[in-house]
Image 1 (cartoon, one colour):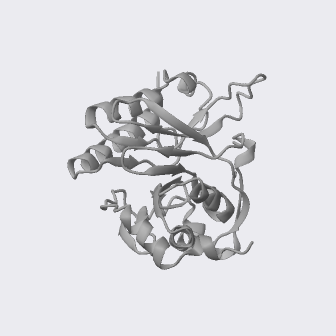
Image 2: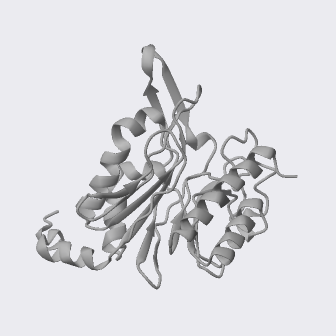
Image 3: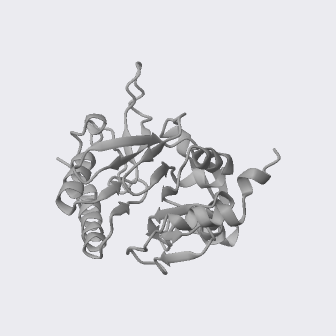
Length: 268
């Protein structure tokens, strides 16, 4: 039986997906670990996620079909397919599903968040994501009917070389499902989203979990859609769940790249 917290997480995700679809969204991006966040032991729950028989995978397939939209499925913990499988360290895998509910591509999070963060009152918090997850090693750009989608996850946002590689492979929209902490998010989330959009002249869609006042691990939220000029087209404000929605005109990318030809000017 799925744990109650996972069921509640999926109910919340379903509500937001339905709202996005009702407002005309063609593609929706869920946050990192949208289904299993808060689960102390996910080993039993993630069985089957690699072959679409798991709780979260079935949910994504159903939502894409029923709503008729593309979905970037945040991340789901998925066991590797190469023996020996490390059952204690799954991949943080982001799936792209089409409106028929088919998995068209996936990306395993490359950069894992191992960091020591200073909090208020002189406190510190240690994060060791590599203790719980395995790192991926391949990038992913997927052609769709409306744009080429590049997939990234959370801590990847701090590594501009990944985004440059995705742009070089033709990405026009890059998605960033995330669980950015409240401390790092307040200082860096919006800045990094805008920087990655500006320097690569493309659209960035960041979907972030939110719970800023959590006593152990606050989450910043602030989900946002950023255009190639660095303008925030829409964002979720404050310590609340919600959706950011915007029209994305791919022609803006070509215009920006023609007016300021960064690629031709690159020296290194």
